[in-house]
Length: 227
Image: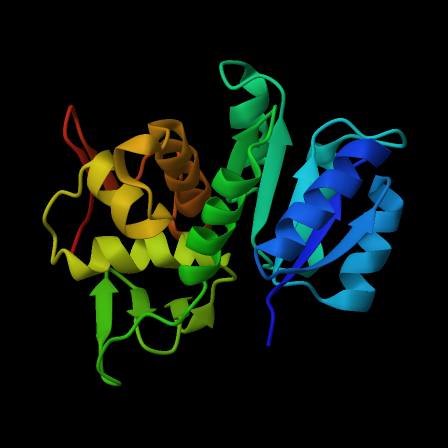
C-alpha cells in the first residue's frame, strides 16, 4: 500500500507540482490550501506524514503544528523559506520532526519523507528490552515510556531519540550519531534538530527540565542517558 502524505500549502502552483512529483515517487498525496483544511484532512485521512508550509493564509504553520500535536503523533515536516532564521527552531519547538527549505527539490523532499517514515517503524529489540533511568522506564520493543508507572506521551521521533540514548548504555551519543541514527541523513542534517528535540524530550521526562538529571549534556560531545 502506498504511504500517504498530507500537503498543506497555499500556493496552488506549488501544490500541483509537489503533488505530481510525490505521486511519481509512489506517495498518495492529499492537499489542503490552508490550516483549517489541513486539520480537517488530518482527521479525515489519517496520513502517514504531514508536509506543512510555515506561511498560510488563515494562520501560521506553528499554530497548526501545535494543534496537530494535541491530537496526533503523526510525523510533521515544516517547510520554511529561511534555513538560518529563528523559524527553523520555532517550527521544531512547535512539534515538527524535521524541516525543509524552499525552493523545494522533489527528489530530496521524497528522500527526507522516506527517512522520516523509516524511523516511525518499531525499534527492533528483544521483547524484554526495558531500560531504566531513575523512575523512567523505556520499553524499546513496545514503544512505551513510563515514569512512576504513568505513560508519557512522546512523538515517534522523541521515542526514537530516547531509545537511541538508552541503547548506548549510558555512553555519550554525539549529535552526528543521533542525526544519523534517528533522522537518517548524517552530516547532511542540522544539529539544531537534535538540540530542540532534546529540549522537548526533557520537558516530558525530566522532573525539572531546567536541571536535567536523566538526559544530560556532555559538554562539547553530545548527550547521554543516566542509567
